[in-house]
Image (cartoon, rainbow, N blue to C red):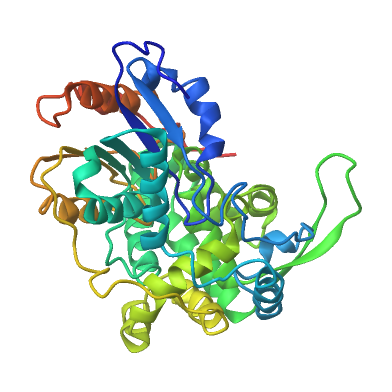
Length: 414
């Protein structure tokens, strides 16, 4: 997407999507609309990482019934079918981040740019860090939103980070007059809902909204219930409903849970095959299973994700990665880092960890943000700070006053 002023434009912004497995090209709509100010002085380049979007997307169609949205993350038969189908058209060992960042550099060179600004969110931050290590001479600056360090070993710490975020969220409910009045025992509700599902999965009749289908009986497993709650904490809009959903579930009423659970969610935007090709090479092999079981033993979110991904990776070909892939990335380039204090997957400690070796960096913690700024007042605050950073090429002395005004929506109590 070209800069509005082609004569005085500065270095371009390269957008790096999350996931792994999300499309960057789909972000073009943002840069054409709400995010068009990025293009005042910069071309914006959205490259679909190999295996995503229209770049030989590594996914297969699935029938999206009500139970589909409540199924485990990686059912065995599905992973087998996914691999069998995709191997007809792809070498599944060739989708690692290191390879993809060399792809990105070829695009940079082909478009005739010397130095570029990187903008990565979630997994896109890890991709940006890898690019900074592999092609440092072509990096003008980087913006990292919700930082995933190169040694994250995803999803080893998912439950730990989610439990921290849930504790903060329930604490906010307790301090909020309306939320506390509606759900005075919210922490007990959370424990009770999980305890009931631990004994046995809930079987509930689900009626699609409107007249779109006949009622059907669905099963809700504890691990799936916890995983849904975890992903809803990514954005404060959905997180605002969590206390109400948990309270009803503790009383055996799963209708509010199903209302939010059955429908498009984060995994629908991710190409599962690409997600597995990346994480089965770069993360899961480095997880010590005993350490994971111990770490997540008393955690409300349990070891669900580690189990699901480890089992899936046992059926997936493993790509090769550089020997030093997990080593932290060092750089003197200007870097602007954003973390959400309520983030259930990449809490601020990762931003702090990465910032130590990025010597010209500034780390901004948004008190009420989850894994991004969805649901907050004035989400454009982050974009204004990012654009000022891009124009200055320096992470120091930025106007960050709007961050304090990024308030969450009120809790939903009925």
